Length: 534
View 1 (tube, rainbow, N blue to C red):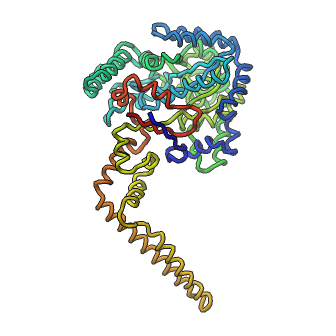
View 2 (tube, rainbow, N blue to C red):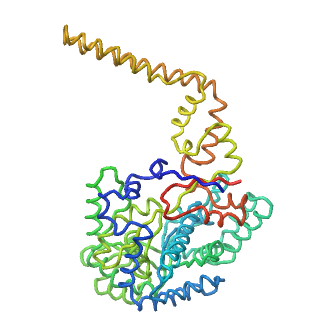
View 3 (cartoon, helix red, strand yellow):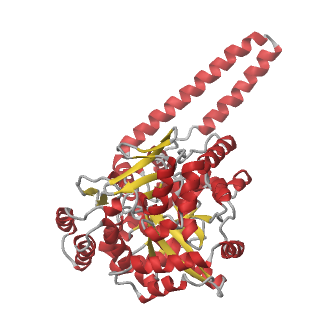
C-alpha cells in the first residue's frame, strides 16, 4: 500500500476547534490536561498510577471475566484482562455505538488507532503494560442511529420496534437483514466469510450486546482487544458517589456550563457539541431509558409514572446502581473511574465534547485523560488511482468542494486561459491614472471613477464565468468522469469513512484488510492518510 498524508486542516472536513486543538493553540490549553505525545505519557502514567486504587482493579478484572463468559476470547485478550489486576497496567480506550455490522468504516479506524497506540507505548515504556479497550455504548437508546449500514450505495436496514437501551435488544428479526445482505454480497470466498461473520454474530447471539462483542472479538481478538460493557452492576457500584453528586448537587451541570461559556468566548466559530442537563443520568430498567428530572423535592422519570423522594432516590442508587445510566456528559467520567486509563481516542465530534468536561473531572478528583483524534483515511483502489492519473488529479484535489474542483481542473486542462487576473490587474493600473487625474482637477469626479472601475471589473467577472461555463460544456465528458470519481470516493459529499462499511473493502482485500490498515495507520501522526492499494 502507498501512503500519503494531508494535514487535517487542509481537508476541509474538520471543525475549527479540532484544528486548533491539533495545532495546540494556546487559547485551548485550559480545556485539556496533556496533549498526546509519546513523552507526555510519562506524566499521565504517574498521575493515573497514583490515583487509581487496587480496590478498583479488584472489581474491574473479575467483572470483565464475567462479561467474557461464553465468549471465545483469545489467549492475548485473556492475558490483558488478567494484567488489569496489576498496578503497572494501563488502558487506552475508544468507544462506539452498537452499529449494525460495525456501521461506518471508521469503527475499524478507532480500534486500530487504539491498538497501535498501546504498541507504541509499550516500546517507549517497556516496564509498563498497556491494554487496548473498546467501550461498547450498550446503554444508548437511539436505535435509529445504529439500525443500518451502507453497502455499495444501498442502505441495509433493520426494521424493528425498539425502546430502551440498545444493548438489551433482541436480535430476533435479523434473519431478514441477513437474507438481503447475502443477496447483495453475491458469491465468492470473501463473500462467504462475510456471510458467516454476520450470521454467527447476529443469528447466534440473543442480544445486540452479545452480537457486537462477538463481532469485535472476531475482528480484533488476535490483537488482545478488551471489550467493555458499562451496563454492569459491579462496575456501576463504583460510580455511586458520582451518581449522587450529579443528581443531588448538579456539579457537572454547573462546571460544564461554565466551561461552555469560556469556550464560546474563546472563539465564536467553536460549535458546542453537547449541553449538560441539571441531572446527567437516565433511569434504566426493562425497556425504558428515560431522563431523571427533579421538580421541587421529587425526582421523576420522564414519560413514566415513576417518582422518588430524596430518601427513596438515595435508597434506589445504593440498591440498584445499574439502573442509573450516564448520558454523554457523565459517561466519560464513568469510564475514567473504573478504568486505569491514560488516553481516549475518538472522532472530531467526540473530542469537541470532551473539551467541555475537564472542569467537571477536576471537581470529581478524577484524572482527565489525554485526548487523541483517531486516524482518518481515504482508501483508493488501483482502478480509481488509474482514473486519477488519466485526469491528472492529485488526492488533495478530491477534497475540494465539487464546484471548486471542477473550476480548478477546467482551468488547468483548457486550451485557452480562463483566468482574467492579468486583465483585472491591468484595468486597476489604468484606473490609477484616472484617480490621479481626478485628484488634480475635480475630486468630486472620484465617485464616478470608482463606479466605472467597479462596473468594468464586474464585467470581467461575468465574461470569465461565461467562458468557464462554455468550457465546462465543451469538456463535459471530463467533468462527468471527474465528478463520478469524487462522488465514488466521497459518497454523499462526505468522507468515505463516515459512509462506507468495511464489508465493501473486505470483498476486495479479504483477510489482508485489517493487517494492512494496522500497518498504514499511525495514531500519533496527526495527518489524514491517503491509502492506495492494488
